[in-house]
Amino acid sequence: MVALIVPGVALVAFFLPVSFLWIQTAWITPLLAIVMFGMGLSLNFSDFSEIVRRPKDVLIGSAAQFIVMPALAYALGRLFHLEPALLVGVALVGACPGGTASNVITYLSKGDLALSVAITSLSTLLAPIATPLLTYFLLRETVAVDVLALFLMICQVVAIPVALGFLVERYWKSFAAKLAKGAPMVSIVAICLIVACVVSHSADKIRAASAVIFTVVILHNLLGYLFGFLLAWRLKMPVAKIKALAIEVGMQNSGLASALATQAFQNAPLAAAPGAIFSVWHNISGAILAAFFKRWKTDSNQPAE
Image 1 (cartoon, rainbow, N blue to C red):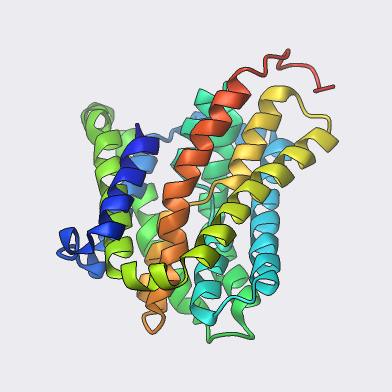
Image 2: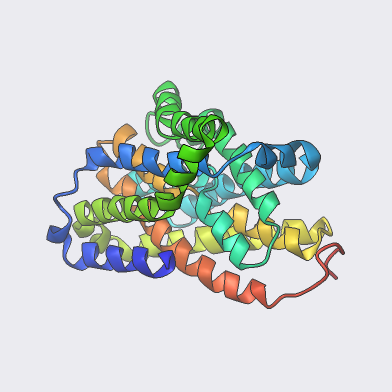
Protein backbone atom coordinates (compact mmCIF):
# COMPACT_ATOMS: atom_id res chain seq x y z
CA MET A 1 0.00 0.00 0.00
CA VAL A 2 2.82 2.42 0.90
CA ALA A 3 4.43 1.69 -2.48
CA LEU A 4 1.34 3.19 -4.13
CA ILE A 5 0.32 5.94 -1.71
CA VAL A 6 3.68 7.66 -1.24
CA PRO A 7 4.48 7.91 -4.99
CA GLY A 8 0.94 9.15 -5.63
CA VAL A 9 1.30 11.92 -3.07
CA ALA A 10 4.74 12.82 -4.47
CA LEU A 11 3.37 13.10 -8.02
CA VAL A 12 0.57 15.42 -6.90
CA ALA A 13 3.07 17.53 -4.94
CA PHE A 14 5.38 17.69 -7.96
CA PHE A 15 2.79 18.61 -10.60
CA LEU A 16 0.45 20.59 -8.32
CA PRO A 17 2.75 21.94 -5.60
CA VAL A 18 0.19 24.51 -4.48
CA SER A 19 -1.85 21.60 -3.09
CA PHE A 20 0.68 21.02 -0.32
CA LEU A 21 2.37 24.36 0.24
CA TRP A 22 0.27 24.70 3.40
CA ILE A 23 2.53 22.08 5.01
CA GLN A 24 5.31 24.00 6.74
CA THR A 25 8.89 22.72 6.56
CA ALA A 26 9.06 23.19 10.34
CA TRP A 27 6.57 20.33 10.63
CA ILE A 28 9.01 17.78 9.19
CA THR A 29 10.89 17.23 12.45
CA PRO A 30 7.82 16.51 14.64
CA LEU A 31 6.28 14.38 11.88
CA LEU A 32 9.39 12.23 11.70
CA ALA A 33 9.49 12.02 15.51
CA ILE A 34 5.96 10.56 15.35
CA VAL A 35 7.16 7.92 12.88
CA MET A 36 10.11 7.04 15.11
CA PHE A 37 7.87 6.85 18.18
CA GLY A 38 5.79 4.30 16.27
CA MET A 39 8.98 2.37 15.56
CA GLY A 40 9.78 2.39 19.27
CA LEU A 41 6.32 0.96 20.04
CA SER A 42 7.09 -1.99 17.76
CA LEU A 43 10.34 -2.85 19.56
CA ASN A 44 10.80 -5.17 22.51
CA PHE A 45 13.65 -6.92 24.29
CA SER A 46 13.52 -9.85 21.88
CA ASP A 47 14.59 -7.52 19.06
CA PHE A 48 17.68 -6.49 20.99
CA SER A 49 18.33 -10.05 22.12
CA GLU A 50 18.98 -10.86 18.46
CA ILE A 51 21.99 -8.53 18.65
CA VAL A 52 23.38 -10.63 21.51
CA ARG A 53 22.29 -13.95 20.02
CA ARG A 54 23.73 -13.28 16.55
CA PRO A 55 26.19 -10.43 16.98
CA LYS A 56 28.21 -11.31 13.88
CA ASP A 57 25.25 -11.11 11.47
CA VAL A 58 23.86 -7.92 13.02
CA LEU A 59 27.24 -6.17 13.13
CA ILE A 60 27.97 -7.15 9.52
CA GLY A 61 24.62 -5.70 8.44
CA SER A 62 25.00 -2.44 10.37
CA ALA A 63 28.62 -1.98 9.32
CA ALA A 64 27.73 -2.66 5.67
CA GLN A 65 24.99 -0.06 5.81
CA PHE A 66 27.24 2.62 7.29
CA ILE A 67 30.07 1.80 4.87
CA VAL A 68 28.41 0.89 1.56
CA MET A 69 25.79 3.66 1.37
CA PRO A 70 28.12 6.55 2.37
CA ALA A 71 30.77 5.21 -0.04
CA LEU A 72 28.22 5.05 -2.85
CA ALA A 73 27.05 8.58 -2.02
CA TYR A 74 30.62 9.84 -2.30
CA ALA A 75 31.29 7.92 -5.53
CA LEU A 76 28.06 9.04 -7.20
CA GLY A 77 28.65 12.63 -6.11
CA ARG A 78 32.08 12.61 -7.76
CA LEU A 79 30.87 10.76 -10.86
CA PHE A 80 27.96 13.12 -11.56
CA HIS A 81 29.72 16.29 -10.34
CA LEU A 82 26.76 17.14 -8.12
CA GLU A 83 26.23 20.72 -7.10
CA PRO A 84 26.74 21.32 -3.35
CA ALA A 85 23.05 21.25 -2.38
CA LEU A 86 22.41 17.94 -4.12
CA LEU A 87 25.62 16.49 -2.72
CA VAL A 88 24.47 17.40 0.79
CA GLY A 89 21.17 15.60 0.22
CA VAL A 90 22.72 12.45 -1.24
CA ALA A 91 25.39 12.35 1.49
CA LEU A 92 22.73 12.63 4.20
CA VAL A 93 20.76 9.74 2.68
CA GLY A 94 23.94 7.66 2.61
CA ALA A 95 24.85 8.49 6.20
CA CYS A 96 21.43 7.73 7.70
CA PRO A 97 20.47 4.44 9.39
CA GLY A 98 17.90 1.99 8.07
CA GLY A 99 14.20 2.63 8.43
CA THR A 100 11.15 0.54 9.24
CA ALA A 101 10.30 0.21 5.54
CA SER A 102 13.16 -2.28 5.22
CA ASN A 103 11.51 -4.51 7.83
CA VAL A 104 8.25 -4.51 5.88
CA ILE A 105 9.99 -5.34 2.60
CA THR A 106 12.03 -8.12 4.29
CA TYR A 107 8.80 -9.60 5.65
CA LEU A 108 7.18 -9.50 2.19
CA SER A 109 10.34 -11.07 0.73
CA LYS A 110 10.20 -13.98 3.20
CA GLY A 111 13.61 -12.92 4.42
CA ASP A 112 15.07 -13.10 7.92
CA LEU A 113 12.75 -10.58 9.61
CA ALA A 114 14.35 -10.91 13.07
CA LEU A 115 17.75 -10.07 11.58
CA SER A 116 16.29 -7.14 9.64
CA VAL A 117 14.68 -5.65 12.76
CA ALA A 118 17.88 -6.17 14.77
CA ILE A 119 20.02 -4.41 12.13
CA THR A 120 17.54 -1.53 11.89
CA SER A 121 17.47 -1.23 15.69
CA LEU A 122 21.25 -1.23 16.03
CA SER A 123 21.83 1.21 13.16
CA THR A 124 19.20 3.51 14.66
CA LEU A 125 20.94 3.37 18.05
CA LEU A 126 24.26 4.16 16.38
CA ALA A 127 22.83 6.99 14.26
CA PRO A 128 23.39 9.89 16.71
CA ILE A 129 27.13 9.21 16.50
CA ALA A 130 27.58 7.61 13.08
CA THR A 131 25.41 9.92 10.95
CA PRO A 132 26.98 13.25 12.01
CA LEU A 133 30.52 11.87 11.69
CA LEU A 134 29.86 10.31 8.29
CA THR A 135 28.16 13.49 7.08
CA TYR A 136 31.16 15.53 8.17
CA PHE A 137 33.55 13.12 6.46
CA LEU A 138 31.59 13.19 3.19
CA LEU A 139 30.97 16.94 3.10
CA ARG A 140 33.92 18.49 4.91
CA GLU A 141 35.42 19.80 1.65
CA THR A 142 32.08 21.06 0.32
CA VAL A 143 30.08 22.76 3.09
CA ALA A 144 30.42 23.50 6.80
CA VAL A 145 28.97 20.67 8.89
CA ASP A 146 27.99 21.28 12.51
CA VAL A 147 28.52 17.81 13.96
CA LEU A 148 27.17 18.72 17.40
CA ALA A 149 24.00 20.25 15.94
CA LEU A 150 23.41 17.11 13.86
CA PHE A 151 23.96 14.93 16.93
CA LEU A 152 21.44 16.89 18.99
CA MET A 153 18.95 16.92 16.11
CA ILE A 154 19.14 13.14 15.64
CA CYS A 155 18.71 12.64 19.37
CA GLN A 156 15.61 14.84 19.22
CA VAL A 157 14.13 13.26 16.10
CA VAL A 158 15.24 9.63 16.47
CA ALA A 159 16.77 8.56 19.78
CA ILE A 160 14.28 10.18 22.18
CA PRO A 161 11.06 9.22 20.28
CA VAL A 162 12.27 5.63 19.79
CA ALA A 163 13.24 5.38 23.46
CA LEU A 164 9.87 6.76 24.55
CA GLY A 165 8.02 4.31 22.32
CA PHE A 166 10.11 1.44 23.66
CA LEU A 167 9.45 2.46 27.28
CA VAL A 168 5.71 2.75 26.67
CA GLU A 169 5.70 -0.75 25.12
CA ARG A 170 7.77 -2.09 28.02
CA TYR A 171 5.89 -0.62 30.98
CA TRP A 172 2.38 0.21 29.69
CA LYS A 173 1.69 -2.72 27.41
CA SER A 174 -2.10 -2.34 27.25
CA PHE A 175 -1.81 1.34 26.35
CA ALA A 176 0.97 0.53 23.86
CA ALA A 177 -1.21 -2.13 22.24
CA LYS A 178 -3.96 0.42 21.66
CA LEU A 179 -1.49 2.91 20.18
CA ALA A 180 0.13 0.23 18.04
CA LYS A 181 -3.15 -0.52 16.27
CA GLY A 182 -3.18 2.92 14.69
CA ALA A 183 0.57 3.49 14.52
CA PRO A 184 1.12 2.08 10.99
CA MET A 185 -1.55 4.32 9.46
CA VAL A 186 -0.33 7.36 11.41
CA SER A 187 3.22 6.66 10.21
CA ILE A 188 2.06 6.41 6.58
CA VAL A 189 0.24 9.74 6.89
CA ALA A 190 3.29 11.36 8.49
CA ILE A 191 5.61 10.03 5.77
CA CYS A 192 3.24 11.26 3.06
CA LEU A 193 3.12 14.72 4.66
CA ILE A 194 6.94 14.84 4.84
CA VAL A 195 7.30 13.84 1.18
CA ALA A 196 4.55 16.22 0.09
CA CYS A 197 6.14 19.09 2.00
CA VAL A 198 9.64 18.59 0.61
CA VAL A 199 8.53 17.96 -2.97
CA SER A 200 6.00 20.81 -3.13
CA HIS A 201 8.41 23.38 -1.66
CA SER A 202 11.24 22.24 -4.00
CA ALA A 203 9.20 21.39 -7.11
CA ASP A 204 10.78 24.06 -9.33
CA LYS A 205 14.30 23.13 -8.29
CA ILE A 206 13.59 19.43 -8.75
CA ARG A 207 12.36 20.10 -12.29
CA ALA A 208 15.51 22.06 -13.06
CA ALA A 209 17.77 19.18 -12.05
CA SER A 210 15.37 16.24 -12.24
CA ALA A 211 17.45 13.99 -14.51
CA VAL A 212 20.48 14.17 -12.24
CA ILE A 213 18.53 13.82 -9.00
CA PHE A 214 16.51 10.83 -10.10
CA THR A 215 19.48 9.08 -11.71
CA VAL A 216 21.66 9.41 -8.62
CA VAL A 217 18.90 8.45 -6.18
CA ILE A 218 17.90 5.37 -8.19
CA LEU A 219 21.52 4.24 -8.62
CA HIS A 220 22.23 4.82 -4.92
CA ASN A 221 19.34 2.58 -3.91
CA LEU A 222 19.87 -0.18 -6.51
CA LEU A 223 23.62 -0.37 -5.96
CA GLY A 224 22.96 -0.58 -2.22
CA TYR A 225 20.77 -3.65 -2.81
CA LEU A 226 23.43 -5.14 -5.09
CA PHE A 227 26.39 -4.63 -2.74
CA GLY A 228 24.39 -5.91 0.24
CA PHE A 229 23.40 -8.97 -1.78
CA LEU A 230 26.95 -9.63 -2.99
CA LEU A 231 28.40 -9.25 0.51
CA ALA A 232 25.94 -11.73 2.01
CA TRP A 233 26.44 -14.12 -0.93
CA ARG A 234 30.22 -13.91 -0.60
CA LEU A 235 29.91 -14.73 3.10
CA LYS A 236 27.82 -17.79 2.14
CA MET A 237 24.87 -16.71 4.24
CA PRO A 238 21.55 -18.60 3.99
CA VAL A 239 19.06 -17.20 1.49
CA ALA A 240 16.82 -15.65 4.15
CA LYS A 241 19.79 -13.67 5.50
CA ILE A 242 20.90 -12.65 2.00
CA LYS A 243 17.47 -11.15 1.38
CA ALA A 244 17.52 -9.27 4.70
CA LEU A 245 21.03 -7.91 4.25
CA ALA A 246 20.45 -6.75 0.65
CA ILE A 247 17.29 -4.90 1.71
CA GLU A 248 18.81 -3.42 4.86
CA VAL A 249 21.82 -2.02 3.02
CA GLY A 250 19.79 -0.56 0.15
CA MET A 251 16.94 1.05 2.11
CA GLN A 252 17.64 4.10 4.25
CA ASN A 253 15.71 6.28 6.69
CA SER A 254 15.38 8.91 3.98
CA GLY A 255 12.76 10.81 5.96
CA LEU A 256 15.49 11.53 8.50
CA ALA A 257 17.76 12.69 5.67
CA SER A 258 15.11 15.17 4.51
CA ALA A 259 14.53 16.41 8.06
CA LEU A 260 18.25 16.94 8.66
CA ALA A 261 18.64 18.69 5.32
CA THR A 262 15.72 21.00 6.03
CA GLN A 263 16.82 21.91 9.54
CA ALA A 264 20.63 21.76 9.42
CA PHE A 265 21.22 23.05 5.88
CA GLN A 266 18.56 25.73 5.53
CA ASN A 267 20.70 27.71 3.07
CA ALA A 268 20.48 24.79 0.61
CA PRO A 269 16.75 24.02 0.16
CA LEU A 270 17.37 21.55 -2.66
CA ALA A 271 19.31 19.35 -0.22
CA ALA A 272 16.02 17.90 1.05
CA ALA A 273 15.01 16.69 -2.44
CA PRO A 274 17.18 13.52 -2.65
CA GLY A 275 15.75 12.26 0.64
CA ALA A 276 12.18 12.87 -0.51
CA ILE A 277 12.78 11.18 -3.86
CA PHE A 278 14.52 8.27 -2.14
CA SER A 279 11.46 7.89 0.14
CA VAL A 280 9.27 7.50 -2.93
CA TRP A 281 11.61 5.39 -5.03
CA HIS A 282 12.72 2.85 -2.41
CA ASN A 283 9.09 1.94 -1.72
CA ILE A 284 8.64 1.20 -5.41
CA SER A 285 11.93 -0.66 -5.85
CA GLY A 286 11.44 -2.46 -2.54
CA ALA A 287 8.02 -3.76 -3.61
CA ILE A 288 9.49 -5.01 -6.90
CA LEU A 289 12.44 -6.62 -5.11
CA ALA A 290 10.08 -8.28 -2.62
CA ALA A 291 8.08 -9.81 -5.47
CA PHE A 292 11.30 -11.22 -6.94
CA PHE A 293 12.79 -12.39 -3.64
CA LYS A 294 9.53 -14.04 -2.58
CA ARG A 295 9.94 -16.54 -5.43
CA TRP A 296 13.46 -17.45 -4.34
CA LYS A 297 12.65 -20.42 -2.18
CA THR A 298 15.73 -22.15 -0.84
CA ASP A 299 16.25 -23.82 2.52
CA SER A 300 16.80 -20.81 4.80
CA ASN A 301 19.17 -22.81 6.99
CA GLN A 302 21.58 -23.63 4.18
CA PRO A 303 24.02 -21.30 2.45
CA ALA A 304 22.95 -20.16 -1.03
CA GLU A 305 24.62 -22.03 -3.85
